Length: 158
Image (cartoon, rainbow, N blue to C red; front, side, top):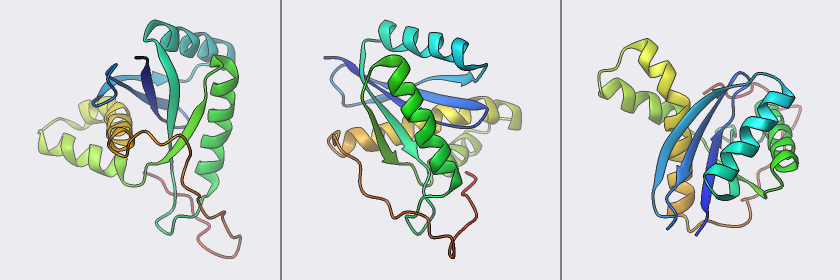
């Protein structure tokens, strides 16, 4: 059975995790530093081919209220681009608190700040992907409430 690629998008670094072929466990895979469209496209095409991925799940950063903000919009733009370069379906999945949880786990493990920074994005991707797997791998995303210009305008920064 093909694997699922989980993505924790950031404007500079992208954390990634992969499911096992049975789609029961998620494992951290990498933190990729974005380098430019052509290089990035080549990297992700190779990654999904080598790891036999048939679906990509991207963590959608939502506000606490469930509304989408600026970072969610950038994430969707990246997801649309990634779907185009890999030819794979992209599903967006709520990633609220995954980075906070990842940071806490790394703190609990006693890692230095530098080591935590190096691992945080891939661990956040693993946590999000594991939650997606535990939810039964839904084929569609839950509906998020669009951002209302009058409310909650600060993007989430986890």
